[in-house]
Every structure is written in C-alpha cells, then in structure tokens.
Image (cartoon, rainbow, N blue to C red; front, top):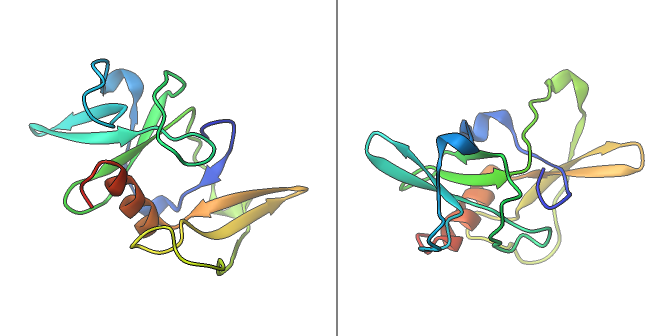
Length: 138
C-alpha cells in the first residue's frame, strides 16, 4: 500500500523486498529516486508514488519491493507490504480500454473484489517500464 491505497502485485514479479533502514535515502534530492538499494556495488533506485501514480518525495514509506527489470531491478516504495496466500484472494483479469500508459502495456490487468472494495493488480512488465521511465532510463 501507498498513498492510502492498496494494490496487488504477482509474487513472481518481485525480485526482493527491502526494509527502509537497509536502503540509502536520497536526502540530497539527487535525481528522482526516493532511495537506493545497494547490492554488489550497484545502486538500484526505488521510487515513491502518490495516489495518482505521480512521483512524490516524502517519508511515508517503510519498505520497497524490487522488480526484475532491464537494465537493472527497480523498486516501488510502499507504506507497507503484506504477503497474501493465493488461496485468500480471487483475482479477476480485465482488459482496460484506451491507450496503454507505458510501452509495457496497461498498468493494471486484473482486480480483486472484496466486498464493496476493488484492489487493482499491477501488470509487472508495465509497472517496471513505468518506473524505469520515471528514472529516465526506459
């Protein structure tokens, strides 16, 4: 969850989940990344988004989920990340109307309807393309 909203991401899309205190915060404002995760001498960026999926800078995040991407993994900062068993949710695929927001396609490809609430499911390829584009590397 971030910006007061919850989203789902397929587990196979996740490369790693890192806690905030294990990352290097971008306190200097150098570039669009909120923080970096350093691994094997390489820094991988994590970005924090608002409810309109626009880049924001604030301290309202606790973890980042890193996605497999080319040329490098890219992270999405979140207030919290909760792992859910597949048996607890029923995801319904859908095909969004209109032009895709990214070169990887539409950002959402399914939803989990629980009661009166719908939780959108990110399409991993589109999300990584979107995040890499924010960083100017797509």
